[in-house]
Length: 342
Image 1 (cartoon, rainbow, N blue to C red):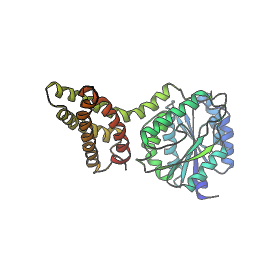
Image 2: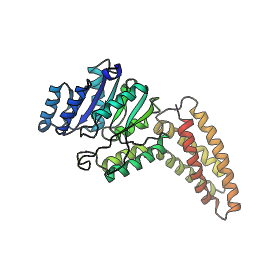
Image 3: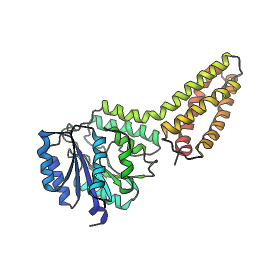
Image 4: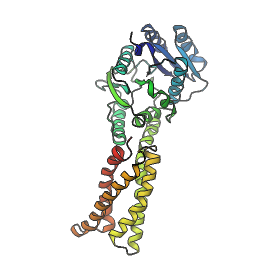
């Protein structure tokens, strides 16, 4: 048995589990794996499930009240580090029977083959897949790729292998419920982690009825995390456009109006992007790179605002909208991948 497998831990957060958790625990321990369970406030009606798992050899951390999957995962990671100082990695799995011991072992193997990466057990979403799972994943992976520049095929998988060097940082990531797993993906660059995907079996039991994922409530939590990437630009755009209109009303030429508005809004945008959107990353040269981009973007934008009204019969105040939308799309990707990249 390799050191990775011998010293890896399978972490399973569980809220009101059934007998399937006992069977999964038995199989994992039979494979020689360490198992950490988190009882996320199921209380007395489910205590016998966790007692049976303890008898099999699992360690159980207990929440007195339900605190959500994100908090349960962080509790479990912390407990793993305290219980097994020689830990080499953690595989997180769900308690409802969707993740098989075979696939869990495959992720441990992938963790050994791809050190320093987050390994995702990615479902293929073929065949009879519940509607909310198929389309929820399609939408989320598209928005996630747009927000982060990282392309993964299954953003919602709960089967993940976390390398040892990332565990302390995993505990500090925001999120108490299902949004935590999306936050982890959004923090990959900050943690200097690559990502590897391993195809796994797609299992839905009773049309995924055992899942505690609420497709409306919890999806909103996930998307609110992603849409903070857009908040900064919308705020800056509002500042920029209002100042531009004010300058035009004061009879400044369109070129001067555009330049003055852009100077103010760029400072607003830089600080929001650096500290709110990109979590302070980018290093000491981020402002230099940002303003180099802003100068190029400003010259192009001002030129288009000055030139286009002579070509297209549209007022300068109106033509600024499509000009800025086009420049925003280009600027966003440059900021994400260059200006505020670690």
